[in-house]
Length: 333
Ligand code: SF4
Image 1 (tube, rainbow, N blue to C red):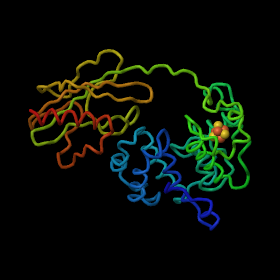
Image 2 (spheres, helix red, strand yellow; image 1 turned 60 degrees about the horizontal axis):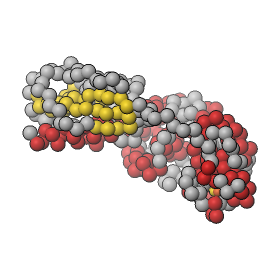
Image 3 (tube, rainbow, N blue to C red; image 1 turned 180 degrees about the vertical axis):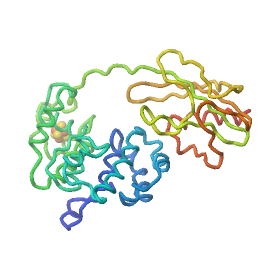
Image 4 (cartoon, rainbow, N blue to C red; image 1 turned 90 degrees about the horizontal axis):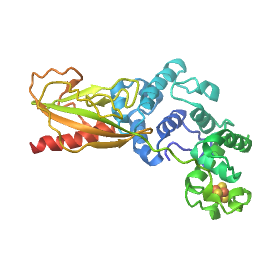
């Protein structure tokens, strides 16, 4: 992983760049390395230092983040970069306590940056580490209720010497050997000490409580294309899902049948298929309405974005799916 500095490099005196450690940790929240890697490379090419990111335009950064999800992270990313550039002379704070004062940095991320970038003896507990601890100590309490205990076990094991390498090693152990299904205990350096392995029950940990099914919400998105090729878009409110991102106008997403509320008068057609998307807490079924509108169309919501400036790749995934369906429909007409 490009933000890593291995033990051999560290012995040779090379240290990770705190900016890159921070950027990777923010991107990795709720996401996998595979989903993040191209975004990380693009961001570090465009903005190689925190002061470069701090002086970037909001809409450029939000556009580059499009598709990575959890858009509040992108807004906090910018706020944090600007604060570090202005108040800390572009030098990320070195301690967990100071890092916690920055926007978008919670307890896990603060510990990870302090340990990985500055080799502080902080306990870093992500899902991988929780799984390893729950197996190592055969914790029978369901994961949701045992997080504190798992953190205590992880804290007890954190060494004073090379805590940064240790933190990354335990996370890697969870990601590559002590995997959720079929852990490769035969290759594990902790095999002799592992209680779950000794019981022959490694895959049964961590104990999970059955998940409640997610509710389904419904909504309508209105996709209007003006006769000169411009698209009607709105910037979503900063708070809430896809906050601050561009999207198609439409009402709220609700569990009851949604109410028609078009942003302008037009002959709206229904392409007959809807967009399905799953957020953390619910499934969404988004019906579409599509219209060609004249040059003098005056919307009550949103603004027209000229064809030359419109780039569907800069839309969040849900909105891009809607665009793909709508543009198919319009090109058939
Ligand atoms: S022995 Fe198996 S279950 Fe125990 S920590 Fe290693 S990989 Fe995980």
